[in-house]
Length: 106
Length: 106
Image (cartoon, rainbow over all chains, first blue to last red; front, side, top):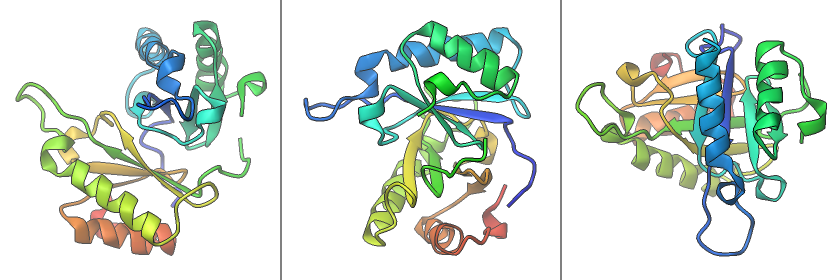
């Protein structure tokens, strides 16, 4: 199972929106804006596409209490974030340089 | 970047639905039914949860022409499928036994 990866970094943002008020949900914590920002920035950096980066929407990743969350594969690195600066740091450090952003890692 | 994975196998089904008639889309090829079937079956097999398997919905994975598609991480194995028997084979062989289903791999 060690073929070359189709995407070097495949990023999934949890965009789940819960109907009831039970568990928290990423949707209510700015996940959509963050995903759109990341997608646009990766495109602007010309990092988008096969062999490079893909920014994806995803349903509930089931780590709601730690949200908002995203996961980067194939590394399997999970992050939380607060604002666009956090997203930019994940892009600049992890997706561009391959360095885990420890302060945002969960 | 080699910590233990939160999910042993994290499966993303492309459920994207296109509005126009340009590229094909996974949604029109039974992706939702397949995802729901996989989710239910993984639950029935008691394989669902941290350290085990997570079946996720995803937006467009951008391999539309090869669709419907799913990807299993952290392996980064991509599959196409036609029916529930294909999904069951991916579950029984790949997710349970760790063996790639070559005939469905893309």
